[in-house]
Image (cartoon, rainbow, N blue to C red):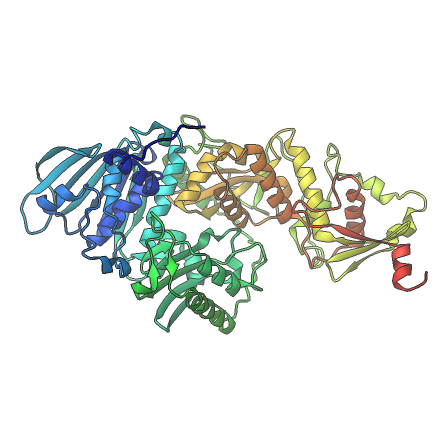
Length: 637
């Protein structure tokens, strides 16, 4: 045990480092503090420059009101602020921030330089602060506004620096942080440059809906339902997506209180309740929620980064958000539009040359997604564009399974993508019985096979030697698909097929960084994707077993899933979780009608799979009732 120690007052430098640990977690935290200061200074244009994800340099330039030399000298002093005057101001905070130790904390773990000039003077002032000490203070020529430079973050706290992720990951966090702030302030223009490359440009616009469209695309923005409500002192402006846009996690729920991005369990629960019954249980609605209320009704000083809040009346907030969303949903027709398979018109020869030129230019401009200095799979290749594409899949890759062209199908046969899984199986797969074995049942099996029926296009009821089993068709097929994918990936990457034309997917900066970070993992799954502009990716190859799956929807869910992974999670764990997701998407769905042959195939494959009694999520795939159970229920015993 440690000996008894005397109580001591900590040195100011150590106090500042502790404060920095609360406020400054990574480069994105620094960007948040500096950008919020710029907003409070009345800036209408904010330019952010970072190098190596913000580890080496963070520079924030604004055109705000600037600081006089006297104020500039106090800016990095602990507990110095222009945003609070008296104690009561703590309970009516209208600014983005007020913590006086923000700049002091930053200067305790980085090298800080500030240049500022107010409009009423002709000359600016520059100071440099390292380890709390002002090393330089001099006059400087500069435009009206403030420039803050932060260099060598955590240079004197190596343990903290080691916790930082790859440059692309940290850049993605910075981008996400700026996007969060920009959504609440459409009147301000934002720019982000990383390693001398402009990666985000958001011009000033008039409405939040326009800013949402710029950040997340017009396809989503055009479908959003606009909601406005002003009752009991709570003003709500919301943009909610129809259920068809639901996502696999809650990261697409942006909540703001008096212009500040927050995470709040009461509001998240209200949003979930509003979508209850409209989306699947494990899906989340997309919503952008802006709440304005008397600042005395909310305490923002309960978390160092002010990401959490405490309500004077949490029930009021919950009920107002829930009512605003639910009542709007009840008045709207939320029936999704019919999405038919896209049929591409034949591409004229002159169009082929134009498209090839555009694709070549994009590929030349884009940076590789793979490890530094290495080209990604498919990097630099121009996808071939046949004149008469009959489907969106081209020739398979070397390791891919070939799919024979199928004749036109009847409506009953063309319902869902999983139909293709009942085609000629790969002879090398232990999970695929031959069609001959299925066509030639053993003696005595024919009658038993005939005694299998589908109920409500959801359950299969089959006779067994000692009773019956009731099978959940989706759960069983999901387990079969999962085990097949799991066994195939042990021998190498999953088979993939190239797309005739790449599928483009709109992504956030953070998702683009995730794609770059996990490029090798995606290759193992049979996915090949590259950047296609600043906010879009192009998918060039896709897993063969998922050949009829909606590519953009799958990629969005995949990236959402990767964003939820905690640091240190092993690659194998992530792969198996993604295989689980792939199996779920490829499996038969509840409501899908099956032919007799498909029913028999599904049941026969059940015997070839380990743990066929439960799906990968742990839900049972079947229930068994013995003759004794039935006789007991009918009181025959």
